[in-house]
Structure formats: C-alpha cells, structure tokens
Amino acid sequence: MPRDYLKKATLHSRSDSSETRKIVRAILDDIEAGGDKAALDYAAKFDKYEGEILLTPEAIAAATAQVPEKLRRDIAFAHANVRKFAEAQKSTVADFEVEVVPGLIAGQKSIPVHAAGCYVPGGRYSHIASAIMTVTTAKVAGCQSITACSPPRPGVGVAPAIIYAAHICGADHILAMGGVQGVAAMTFGLFGLPKANILVGPGNQFVAEAKRMLFGRVGIDMIAGPTDSLILADAGADPMIVATDLVGQAEHGYNSPVWLVTDDRALAEEVMRLVPLLIDDLPEVNRDNAAAAWRDYAEVIVCADREEMAATSDAYAPEHLTVQAADLDWWLGRLTCYGSLFLGEETTVAFGDKASGTNHVLPTSGAAHYTGGLSVHKYMKIVTWQRATREGAKPVAEATARISRLEGMEGHARTADIRLRKYFPGENFDLSAEG
Image (cartoon, helix red, strand yellow):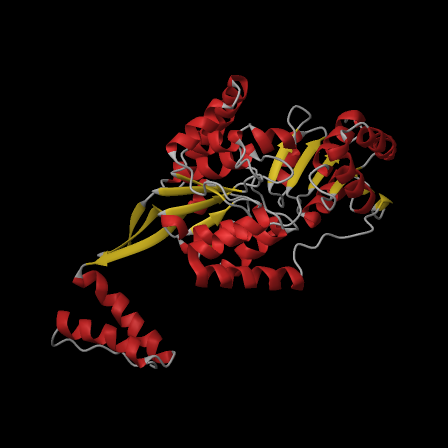
C-alpha cells in the first residue's frame, strides 16, 4: 500500500536566504578589511559585549571556579567518552605503502591540519556539549592550535561551563565572540590567533552562511540547517517513549522537523495524542519552539512493512535516526542514509547529543545522503606520496607519454620522455599516441 500520512508538514525548512547572504557578505568584507577593530565593533553591536575577547588563563580559572563540581564530573565523563570514540576513529586510518608495480612504491599519509576553529553556540542554550564534541576531536586528531569561539552574554561573557569544557578538552585559545564576527576572527587570524585551516561546529543561519562563503579558503565540517530527527517504530514500541523522544528533538527550534515512521497505525495515533500533552508540559522557553516545530514541520507516516519504513527513512536521510523496533541487527544492516543511528529504546538522540561518545555535529537537510558527521577524520588530510627506481619508472613513463599525447598534453608527455632518454640511453621507445 502507499505511504499513509497521518500528519504532513505544512512548511519546509530553509537554511539560507538572499538577505542573509547579503548581510553576511558585508560583515565578512568589513572585518577582513578592518581587522581587529572591525570585529570588535561588530561584537559590541551584535554581542553587546565589550569585555575581554581572548580569555586569559586567569579568566579561565575564574570561570572554572564557578562551575559546580557535579557539572564538572559530568563534563569530564562526556569528554572521556568522546575522546575514546575519537581515538578509535583515528585508529581506522593508517599510513601505508604499496608496491604498485615492481620498483614503484606509493603510499598514504594522514596529516592533521594545523589550526582548527571550533564554534560553540551560546545563545538560547549554552551548548556545553558542542565544546566537548568539536574541541576533543580536534585534539585527538593532533591539531596544533585549537580555538574555541562562543558568543558572550551582554555584560557577563561566555558561559563558565562552556569555558571549562573547552579548556579541559584541549582548546589553546578561547574567544569571547559570536556570530559572523567570531567566525571571521578565526578565519582571518585576528587578535593574534593563527588563521584557521578548518571551521567546525553548529550555529545559526548567519554562522552557517559565513561558513558557506568562506569554504575554499578554509575547510568546513558541513553547512548546517535546522536539526532534524526521525523515529522508526513498530507495534512493540512504547508510545510514551516515542512521543517523548520526538518532543525532545522538536524543542531545538521552531523549524526543527521531527518524523515518525511506523507500520502500526494504533501506535501512530497514540503518539499523536501524547505529543501535544508533552509539549504543553514543557517550560515556556522550550514549549513555543516544540509546539511550532510539531505543528508546522512534523510528519507521521504509516507504512506497509519494515522494508517500506526503511526505504522511507533512507529517502528522508535524517540527521538523527532512532529505531525502536524488533530485530535491531536487520535495521543496522539495511539502513543507509543517516547522520547518527540510535538502535533500541535503551538509547536516544539526547545521549549522542550530550555524553555517549559519538559526535553530535551531524548532516542536516538530507545531507546524510552523501556525508557523515564531524569526526576526527575531518581534521585530517589524507595525502599520498610515491617514489620509484629507474626500472620501476620505465613502464609508467611510457604509458604516461602515450596517454598524455592522446589527450593533447605534449608538455606532460615530454616530462616522461626526458626521463626515459636519461635513464635508458640508446633504447627505442614507441611514445606516440597511436599504434
């Protein structure tokens, strides 16, 4: 049977606009031309903050003293898990060399980028976990300079817990600056910072657009849109847990889609009954976002069977994908498009968002069709090398000369010719493009 939409989105998220692009372009141009002073002017305008920009060790120590011991232990726990997972990821990339043909050896080498810029949101919520996720992976990768940048609160500065998390996770510099001006400061190497080679971390539409515009002169993790989540659930799922998980992700923002895909209509209807009740029970600051996201962007889809459920999920390519259904190994083997996968009721997206070890900087807006999330590998360049004996170079040079001439690239061909003449004087080679 065709998919049955019990609830369909009335709006669809957009991650950028022409007005956003115009604003961001002007700010980036101003700051590149005006340097530190221009960045400070924008910080005063948008952050409404004129305090210390690059935090001193004394400022970091003072912030640390404000973080309760229990929260410090929680941050340390999350940091240890993220570090352990990142170290395991790093071990999957090995340097190697292989003799391609006798006498010609080629190899792979992984090299961390020198300077990483980690953006840590600090607006509506203090994203402590983003500091842990971005800085820890950069440190494990081996980056020599790591800057954590976070928006300060007017008259207060960066949230102490963010400062503490960034510091213990390995940040070499902590910048009290938000938005486009913060991204620009890391990219252009303002305030004595090294120029970032890569920018990572989530942010609002202005931060996302700045990263888009700067991509090329710096690397980026991805261009993030509104966060999204999908739950696959069968008749055995607990509707209260399913509903709670949907609401938990909807609170991210008014335009954060959440989707339920199931083969059980009764489950779908019960979840739809529960979600508005759970939203109404949230604190007001969370309630408005969750209500808008559920009203305008959420979908509930009933499928014929689990294969159709899996196909639907792959078509959506969600950032977060939860499976609350029987036979978890089948789902693990079948599903192909997601940022991060949460198998079984015993885990949930919030675990990955905060403390379980996998990274929460993930592809949104269907980007999971072609990429995964932030990992230690994003901070590393996988480069290649080769060397050869003269005998090993011989067949490669012959093939190179002929292919180059067939392509019309005579200069390329002659770089092979000259070696053959030098290494094998007196030998005749057929280096024409034909024959």
